[in-house]
Image 1: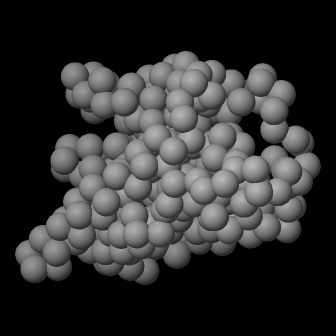
Image 2 (image 1 turned 180 degrees about the vertical axis):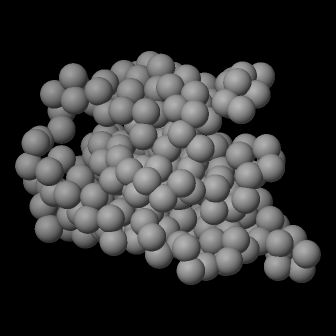
Length: 251
């Protein structure tokens, strides 16, 4: 029952703070929590996506109110995210639970190795490449639809290192794209019965408040600290996902 999660809502608040601060969806908290609650990997990943939607809506509202994100850039990355999510949201049905967790672990491990602190921000382009943002959005849709994670941990490094976008702006765009891709994937997961709607809304609704609060204070944290926090999270999550995948494969 959803009310059984009430003692765990502090973790929802933590997920919301990380979402608003780093541009991620909160799935890195929700997925392990739901697995611990006894859900299968498919159920946990689908329910995680349902929780990501209200979580990122809080941060997205704060970023939109700031007026610092151009609408064409939002349309490009959100459009790519929705398209990727719709394509891949049913692909996970053909994979075993340990396959999904292993893919998560490998993705996090690669990101932990490639994420680097920003070098010379003055050399970064001021214009936002719309085609590049649409491609980044497709990656977000893939990770959300197939793996049940919002994609922020993938998009921010791609935008910072691949497109040379400032970290702050990459986090804002990531939050908006994760919200869009989670919305598309959530509809699929809810309609085919894979996700627990009550659990997702309860955790996500709590996280949304924390996400909005953290997003409004993004500029107060240095870009170097944000990047190293992302890298640390990726390393921890890679170890946890690969450990769970190995347990399922051997069990």
